[in-house]
Amino acid sequence: MQHINNIIIVESPNDRAFVQVLGQEVELSATGIEIVDLHKFPDPTVPEKELRGKHAIGKKLEGLKGQLDRKYTHVKKIGVVLDMDDWDLLTNLKHVNKAVAFAFGTDPKFEKEGQFREISINAGRNTPISLLISCFFTKGYIDLPNDDLKEDAGNLDTLLFAIRKNPQIHVPYADCLHLWADCVNFSESNLKVSPNLYTKMWLDNFLRAMAKEKLGKSGKNILSDFEAKKSDVILELGKVVFDLKHTALEKFRQFLQTFK
Amino acid sequence: MLYLCQPNIFRMVKSIHIENFRCFQDFQLADLGQMNLIGGKNNAGKTSFLEALLLGNVPTSGTIYFLQQVRTENTNAYGDFPEMAWTNLFFGLDKTKRIKLTTTLTGTEITVEIECTEKTKQSVGKRFQIKSDELIQVVDSATLSEIGASTLKIKGSGKNIRFYNEITFTWGTRKPTENHGGPKFQPVLFTYFVPTGFKKPSFVLAREFDRAIALGKKEFVLAGLQAIDPQIKDAMTLNVGEPRIHIVRQNGSMQQLNFYGDALNKVVDIILRIVNNANCLLLIDEIENGIHHSNHEKFWSLLLKLTKEFRVQMFATSHSSEMIQAFQKVASENNAANEMCYFEMFQSERNNQIIANKINLETLAYQIQTEQPFRGE
Image (cartoon, rainbow over all chains, first blue to last red; front, side):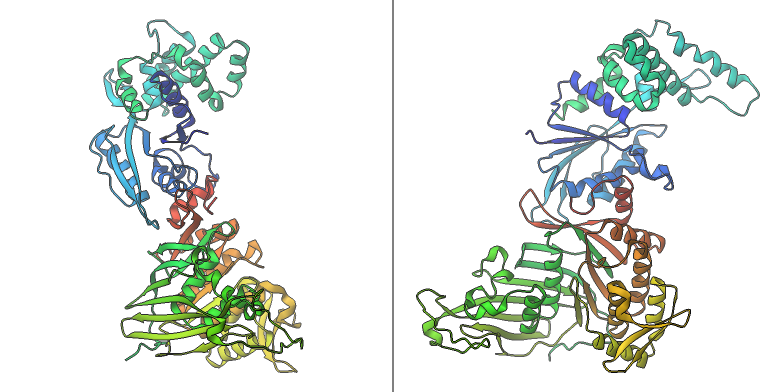
């Protein structure tokens, strides 16, 4: 049995699937690494924000602390991969610093992505456990309403949108959404389609179309419960529909390589 | 000048360092609150931790003998094999190493060192005794123990603290003997231990209840009973035959407390220990025993209120998920994260040492909600 040497924490099962796909591309060991997500579906009475995604990272890390003596006895490195969202890099770094300090009692003082900091965990232990911890933020670009691009922002959806293969090829099932979005945004309706929502919907429809086209019968089944199966589609078709050598992935690839 | 227990001063245990005691080779716990819950699997060391707290605060031969009784050790056998008498106290059953318990309290520190010394039969002389079962035991020293006496030496020190006492099992005897070869121990902090499954005799409970009434604290006991069972209207002691606590229900019916099952007996025992012993240290093993899960939150709320009111520090153990969840909920609802602390105790697979990992109550809630381990799994 191979021990888990590295843990990568990501926000959602979709992020986990993509990190697995990109991990294969950079030849990460599939057995020595565990990719865990922050997406457990919570008790509906508890505010979702507290339990899911980047808001839960501090609690997730603290939960891992106890497991370092049981499930993860050989872990040397922890990577935190969160969405950049519309926060700037500094705000995201501060968020991770705060989460690590909450969990382990030491502020790693990250100043940039991909930087490794050594954390010593000694609560209740005679011999402290030493770990290397690092972070990275998933991002692409967001189309702003005035046709400008906001770079280094967004999340997995915006990244996948940016690295789709053959962007010049028209995919009506996804591309025609812009007609709908324009129609809504130019109407007098109070409901507007934000760039984030558009990108998410575009990607979902793109993956649906790809699943139907490339996965045959099993692809059709996916369409019935797509949200739950999106991560499976990313895992299955990631190499086929996304350009894993895209320049937008350069830093992400470098980050994952540090967990080899 | 020796430290005497000052019942008007609230001293909290701030930290404890345990060396070579039971399953603890070298264990430290700090960052404690007023109410501390220790969760973990069976045999994780939870009971031993409470025992260390008791022995660290009441380091007497009486405590040693009490622990042997609580663990239902076969002390009768120690007359034949004195070398077995203290073995279970030592880490790895290695009596050659010294037990050391260092308890840091508000304003002071107590260091207790315990070591075992043994004498051969020759040095204590040969004895032939008539045992209580009236069988004359003819002892063949070639087939039985070579050890004639095994002594535990308990030595304590600290700021204004110095004491020494011994407890010895001698071959051919049935009970240990005590000896104070130096200054006697004077408690700094009154400490009470409620072992798992312990049921206080009814007449003792009745006496404690009368004491609470005499001290004008009956309302607290009654409120505690009503928190568990709202149908309870009143409680009183009746001295018919053996004194016993009786419960009066809303419909006027009256029945002995004993008939209400273990839970209510346990709740009354714990409440009485708190209200009658302000500023004490209370240790409760397997606190959930006998208490229905629907009452867990009420019980914690009651304990939070009483420990604050009577300035009692509490350490409890549990392996019940429901009891731990109720603890977290009550702490969260009362904004009591500073007072209520949760520790997960387990054996490290890295170095086999026992570890108590303090889990922030927010994180505990997260782990409960997302079905992640929080009891040493």
